Image (cartoon, rainbow, N blue to C red; front, side, top):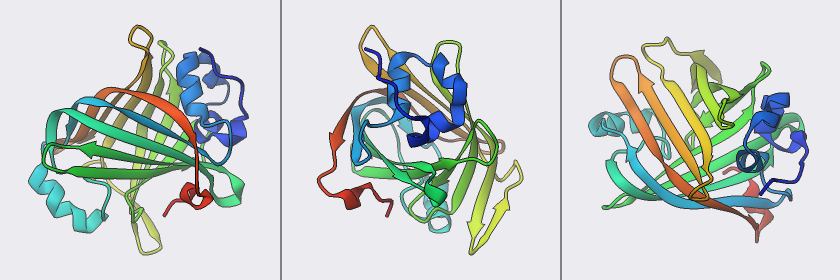
Length: 225
């Protein structure tokens, strides 16, 4: 089912993709376009075939540095998860999007949050990670030949007080994300990997989910806290 046209001004992804958005599958286009009303949000439920980080001890050590709601400390298979996407307005009324992903590991749940903002260069977005927003990743947005949304990192920065310091490659991460759609099972797909050139895979997840839009009961919920 194709999505009805929506303003590119209301979606951080559509604003970045420009004309390239027309190459997306209709279901992927509907997902990146966001909810039809400003105070709606999207909610998805699914299962990751595999999710988490193989570097549990390192993630525990780094949490005080990067802050909460960023690093996960488990690596498991068949992990149920929930994602909630909330559109908002950033500085100068530009489109922005906050996302909260909850990984339901067997022993406990862990949360990963981020906020997407328009990048300075065409075709890019800035992903601000964690509750304290200390890590920023510049992502290039493109449509793949299969009509999926591809996000690939171009730079990684850390915020220290008011300074934004670009990390050298050996201290930063390479991010690759692909959002797609499986027409046979009628469900959305996601593949993501975060790697460091020295320690290898920092975080990864791949799986499927089904997604629907809902009306916020409280407009304040649409704000990033």
